[in-house]
Length: 96
Image 1 (tube, rainbow, N blue to C red):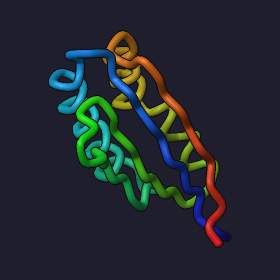
Image 2 (image 1 turned 60 degrees about the vertical axis):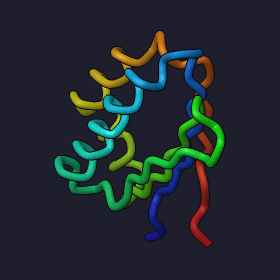
Image 3 (image 1 turned 45 degrees about the vertical axis):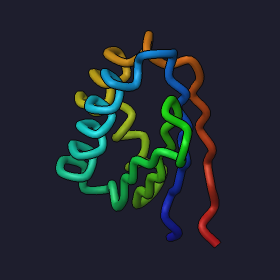
């Protein structure tokens, strides 16, 4: 079975990145440490774009991703950062 891969783009509201980034990094770390189906969780900041974060996430399958979305650390992150985010885009990818 091919892995389930997503790319997530966050654009934060002006001045929100300082509070957002530690929460994002904590969510990534908890995903890797606590979710057996999470293979990779990279947090990336494009050069020169201080208000934009990209995530590259690989899960064993869709079920592992769905488990991630209901994990306590993810739901806490989502609640804590909701007002900090101007835009969030999720792209589901096929591994070729």
